[in-house]
Image 1 (cartoon, rainbow, N blue to C red):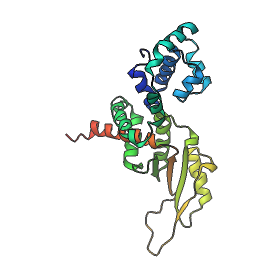
Image 2 (image 1 turned 135 degrees about the vertical axis):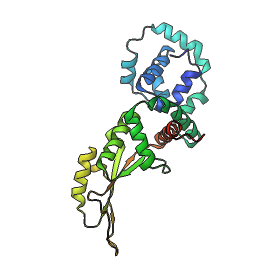
Image 3 (image 1 turned 45 degrees about the vertical axis):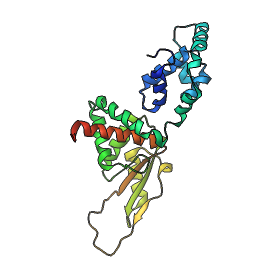
Image 4 (image 1 turned 60 degrees about the vertical axis):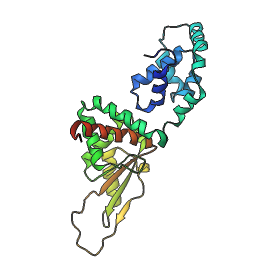
Length: 241
């Protein structure tokens, strides 16, 4: 996939969180072929030693050959390039992540679940909080968001938290049990419930199960990606030009 430590490899390292699993494996194998140890690779890309061992177990090269390649090519790697792999999540590179995701959307647009989830986030998701947030009163919409997040953003259950918005008089314990069953999230991932006061006017359209807001921890970079996907949907279905 890569020739030595070339521009394509550096670019892949910088875009690590946007890579598919097989692309991440190719990056790890390319670094291993250059003669880097698992410890050194782990300093460049966030992969544990066990995973690296599994990915690189069947590579067909000798240790001597790998060391020779590393000696010839190491001079091409600058500390500035490697440092960028640790900084690319910052605001300065948000536009780069968004632009790359916009291109990525061209292929993802062929998958119905991706289209449904991205459209749902476009309509109901947070755009300006620097984290992924999604709120809805419809259990099926919440399930869609979680499944979409797991499938396309590689999120695990521990990355989600949930907060409920209820009206006074609703049984919070029952509602937490309900939404826990909907989302599969345990009780310790629930945030403090917001309860709206009764007020003086006549209440209309009281939502029996309230509204659930899902937040994804440490997701600023993922939000840039999702916003890029939304840009891609606009290109495909709502072109401005």
